[in-house]
Length: 123
Image (cartoon, rainbow, N blue to C red; front, side, top):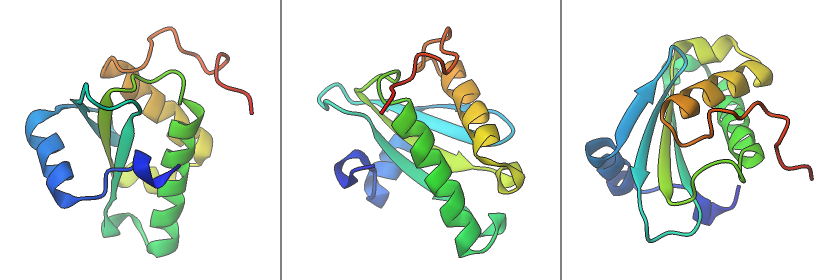
């Protein structure tokens, strides 16, 4: 995921927390903030130290980035997404993370409800 597609600054995170809409399941909380001026969505990740050591936290972040990379054509582009990983994510593999993220993104109505993974981009 390119750096310009990431939310990095604390100010941007706080703005999304205050103004954005939040949706959650047991594994993730997703804040989505509409920013009509941008051409591509951006993601910000938050993985607590409670989820494991640095290796585990980085693995979780890689899984989340990969899911967003695969959903590139399916998500609404004019949004910032802040993803907060919860405790159960530490014990999940990539496919479980993907399934859970797709579920919460459908709840937030930024991913088409009919999306099932078969119409994803092939690269």
